[in-house]
Length: 193
Image 1 (tube, rainbow, N blue to C red):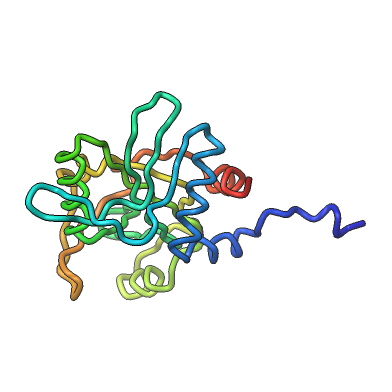
Image 2 (cartoon, helix red, strand yellow; image 1 turned 180 degrees about the vertical axis):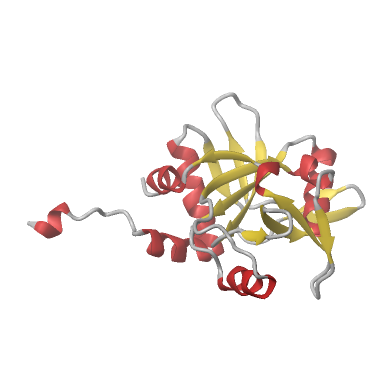
């Protein structure tokens, strides 16, 4: 009897692990979008799309909401935010080349492109705790979780900072640079349907 009453939805930890896989995460986003009344489909494998004289990788998902205005959606999943102690801000980063490519693609095809950021864990990461200890500072005991969104074109012009990495320059934004769409529980519910 107790087994029949068990909640079939995954636990927070299990859900976070599912989202760690890119394909599983994209499939969850498609289900969530469909639960909100949009038609959506994943790009199968890297699909290269003409963008002027070159080809760039198309974003993860094509969405057609009920109003008929198609858009692209690039999905990024993070376990948690990075906390910038000196600025008292939650931040995330993306390779600059990806943002530029998606902004160019959006402009070239006149199809809006958005970044969808899913943050699944509220516990501060070890790296932030170590940094706080070194700086004799504190970090919040709970980090925000949920789903955020921003137009890629807007992101291309509003980065907070840039950092060189082995993979190329990373651009950084703060949580308030994005629009929060929903809490993680609401996303999980729609993605589980």
